[in-house]
Image 1: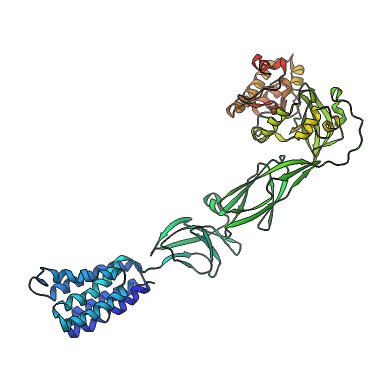
Image 2: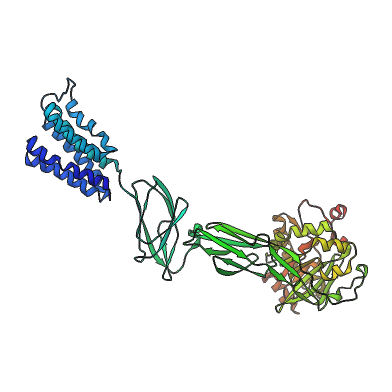
Length: 532
């Protein structure tokens, strides 16, 4: 409701008897004036009527100015001033209609005693003042009205960056203009979605927001109504406990956790450290407050928690036997067998929660702090790269610079307990090195080799597009994800159609242009050997 317009219309009613009794206007003319004032009363409640009321009152003011005067409508020897004066005198009504209406009525009464010639223009200025205020659109409240929510339900709206909680069906805004944001509302276990998400409202406007019921929330349409949490630095598959505003969530590496913030502008979060075997993964920042619409990445760093170790007679690093790790737990993975050994290190088979993994442990001879530091720095990128279905997955890369230094200095106990390791997907089918010897005499041999080369080529294409080179492509680093069938034709079909070939050992990969620190001479190009 426009209270100022309502008061101004009421004040203007005073001129009706003046026009009838003092100015001797006919009842028909007075009735027309009354109609204009009635329209103004209506427009105080219905804004869209104000333009009609304003134009109507201006028109009747002009007609009565013409009808009520004779001659050339001049005043003070100024031609047509009598016609123009009511419209000039009414202009202050745009800013102060209530006060100016009273001023014009008093001024008309005084002029009837002192200078009757200008009595009519001054009384008519009461009408033009009212007309101008109608046309200006001023005095109306700035309002946001909501429809579709249950009566009395609490709902929230963000206005100029501040969240307001409401229970009525409308919000009155005092600012001249405001930016607003709306989120879906949860009322009695039912979601209500707004048809308008955001906008700008200006003084005197009314915006109507309609809510409708929904079974779920399409959060892609309401990104400002959620907070997204990610974690980095944990081994793949390991959960961390995240508490957000008292609600507990499990979150893992690579997962994007979406937390609704429908009626809260800020969320308070806290995350717990994670222990895997002898390794504690501690969050760099373990708690904080986030504004909804933001994304939080929680970074973990690994710390070692030494536990009492059973005394084991260890060989020197120069004569190391990887079988000494069998039945030992390394970073939460129990070693059950040694499945490979080469110039760059050892590969052991390990078990965790009834699932098998391959752990590549770098050999002391090829270990340097700088090379493993680079690998560890790239660990998150390599884990991301390994998600391709043609590459053996990497779940975690473990190293501690202090232990690396100890191992380089010949500390066998450090190597036994905290070896630099890469946890990978275990490939049941073994390597192509074993397969080739078995099928060399098969009539399908050349076709199988071609199919393998094609699969490896696709894996390398994927790596190269992302700025990496593998640097150790050889039969022992090409794996089969399943045990190969004895039927060579069936094997060819599986390689071609099921994608059972995977390229492994991303631990040797480096970014294009970076320093090369290792090579397998029989499978390395001359440029790689020369770069060592």
